[in-house]
Image (cartoon, rainbow, N blue to C red; front, side, top):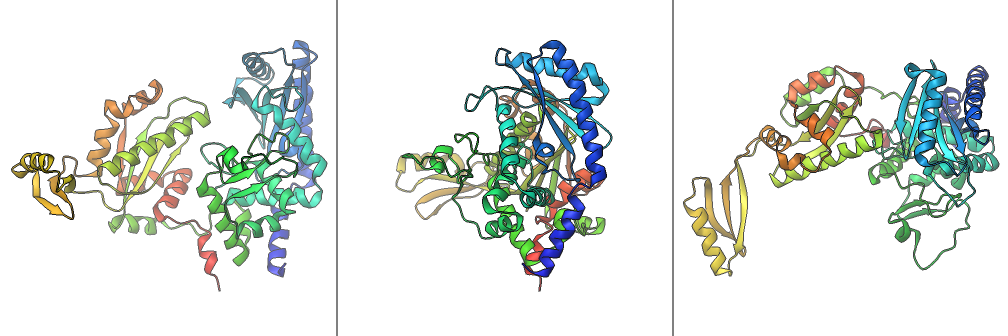
Length: 475
């Protein structure tokens, strides 16, 4: 290991590893919450257990993001609906609505907000593997696995990897991110032997990649890539029928690979500080847009109410739907994205190489399909919207037609307000799109930069490159 690399990792750990004062503060808060919740839940049923799980229990947490996970273990004779309702009502009764935020996964859970940290209170069942009744049942055993296998080096390695992935925007298994979960990070450093070993492996990684942390999964007739329908498989050591890496998109997989390559070329604390270095100035942003080389558009609507994974899943489907419609209308969307505060504002973003197309080429029959070719020629020969042709190119008839939707704004207005576009979406989504605003170019820039969170998403979209790419070519 080079001296520079060693020094950067050492400094990074000082930045992200909790010190004794913070540990004491967190432990006191967690112990108090557990004590309070035990009192509340034991009044309901003394069989209910309250346990600390997650990164704090495993000691793989960082000072950059302090979240405690407290699990409420219910006996099997409770229904899923009951464990969700009981958890919500019990936590709110103790801590009040003002401090509690309702969240949803497979079933509801509650986040209690403290000044310096959040505490997630999650219901699950007390069961033995592999008799899972809900997705959260495995978490208890994930904690036991890490605690039994990890030494101090692996704990610190997990911290480094988590913050590294956060810095490049690839941490988190939620649909909004499509990245690496905390448990996946832990399994990777366990498999490769540490943070640096993981980074080196991923800097030259190839697909398919199959990782089995326990090396105990029996290979049957099908390969793991076939079983899980994925080229990136990390088998859950607690549940061999589960792929821990299922949420990771191909974009984030390769982003991580190239960021590892970049980090090894030029080690820097930037990868652990969660701040984008040397963000482009307002002048640089304005110059890109005003030059006309790229066109930027946004659709602004009010967010609808839905659990986060459902909400962001719907956003991604809408983006894909707009991209498909744009393609059908010959507009080339180079990149799209979305930003939302999930309560007041939702902004769909698009970058195009051109936002105005006057004509479109229409494909006709094969030249030897005489009957249909004559119909095609007759239809378009004297039509007022025909700009050129009909003409033969290779073995087909073509015609160049005037477009009804000549600008991207026209197209957006047309599809977003159409019944066809909205028909299969839930009613709450349809209601949000009944009132929308299209922003473009300078107007979009002014809106996007008025919020730091919006600006980060917009700048990344506009400049089309990650902040760490330049490090690949440092002399």
